[in-house]
Amino acid sequence: EVQLVESGGGTVQPGASLTISCVASGFNFSGYDMSWVRQAPGKGPEWISAIHGTGKPLYYKPSVKDRFTISRDNANNMLYLQMNDLKPEDTARYLCARGYGVGIDRRGQGTQVTVSS
Image 1 (cartoon, rainbow, N blue to C red):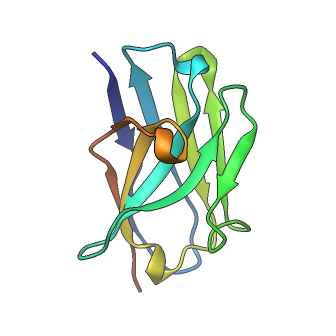
Image 2 (cartoon, helix red, strand yellow; image 1 turned 180 degrees about the vertical axis):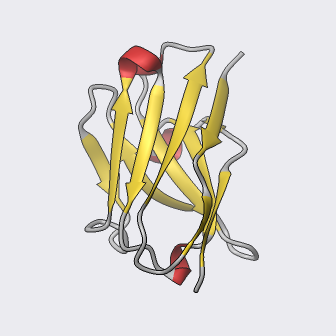
């Protein structure tokens, strides 16, 4: 069974940094591109970053490109998103997803990130 479990969310002040994680199981992790998607209350999902199975970043949403870094540890089936200079508009539930763009076929339950002073 494919499982994606996110962790590391929380409430931080504007300008702070936070790293969220996702542990994957039930499939050949290194064989898949992976993504982070976020969803704010009352809004549709936003695809914010993706990474190739080899670890090469594939995509960043322009509004996060210079602040967020996606990475992965294939030996431990882990996906990460390092977020710097967080802004109130980054407040959302962040979901780990298997796949890239229209190829996303599984998502986790997500971890909540709230940016507030």
